[in-house]
Length: 300
Image 1 (cartoon, rainbow, N blue to C red):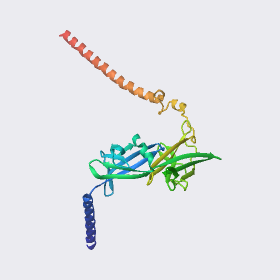
Image 2 (cartoon, helix red, strand yellow):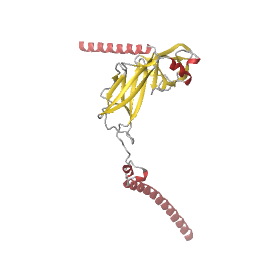
Image 3 (tube, rainbow, N blue to C red):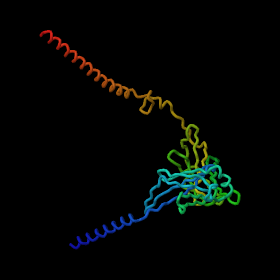
C-alpha cells in the first residue's frame, strides 16, 4: 500500500512539472533574430544574405515576407544597397550595386547594415574585412598538390591572413568531397594551406576535368569566401552509345525490348478486339430481332 502511495506521489510530481513547463513555454515571448552574412564568390562577386527568424525557447521558425533595407557603412541614400523581402525560408539575397564599387574599394573594412522600415530600433550590423582566396596546383613526381592562400586587405595592400579555417575539396553533384585526409585546414603564417590530393581516378566527364573548391565558411572576420579551379585530374568518361542503343528497359522508345512490345500490343489488341466483337454481336442481335419481327408480321 505504501509503495502505491509513493508511485502516485511521484506521478503527481511529474505531471505538475510537465504542466509548469508547458505553461512556461506558452508564456515565453518570441524573439526576432536577424542575421547578416557576407559572401565573396571567386573574388569577383560580392553579395549579402539576410535571414529573419522567430526564436521561442529552443525552437526557431523562418519569417517570410519581411521587408529590410540594406546599407553599406552608414544609413543614407548614397550608401543604399537594396530593399529586399524574405522568401519562404526567411532569407533574402542582394548583390552590391555598381554605384558602391568605388566606396567598397576605398576601405579595408566595411559595415553591412540592415534596417526594418518603420522600426528605428530594428538595426542589424555586420563588420567585414576585405579578403580573397587564391587556389593553385602543382604536380611533381606523380604527386598532385593543392595550394590555397588567403589574403586580407590592410594598409592599402594585400597581406597574408593566418589562422583561417578552410575546407578544400572537389565539387561533386552531391556537394563537396574532401580533397585531402582532413575535414578542414588552417592557414599558416603565410596565409597558405598545402595538401596532397588523395582522390585518384575520379570521373571527370568527357574532358577529364574536375573542379577544385576552397571555402572559408562563416569566418568571423572575412565572412564566406569561395574560389574554384578546374583541372584535368579526373578520369575521362565517355558515354557508351552502344549500351543505350541495345533493347533495354532504360533505352529510348525506339529500342524497347521485344517482349515488352509484345505484351503491350497484345493487351491493346485484346481490349480493342473485345470491344469490336461486342459491337458486332450487338449489331447481329439487332438484325436477328428485326428479322423475327418481319416473320411474325408476315405470318399474321
